[in-house]
Image 1 (tube, rainbow, N blue to C red):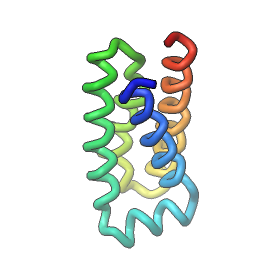
Image 2 (cartoon, rainbow, N blue to C red):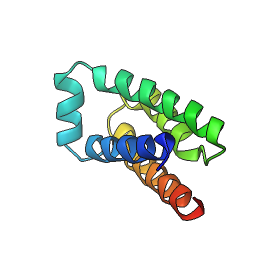
Image 3 (cartoon, rainbow, N blue to C red):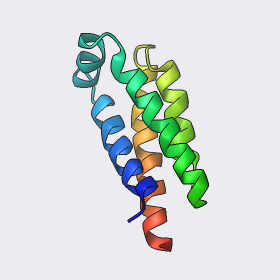
Length: 98
């Protein structure tokens, strides 16, 4: 299993966690939006590694956009959920072609 695939599953799971209503907002607000910065860094790392390996980059790009606009109530929740779905689909796609 490639590093980019593992990172897609990890970032997808974290995005899914942050997309849970009330829980995700509580995590982000209680940590003063630091989780969004951490996720931005993880998505950039995942994107770079995925590009090197020639994998699908849609989920990572959407994750980067999500990290930048997720401070907006409700929009952030929806974006986290969409990012989680696309990241996990990308990770699964990489698994089928490996």
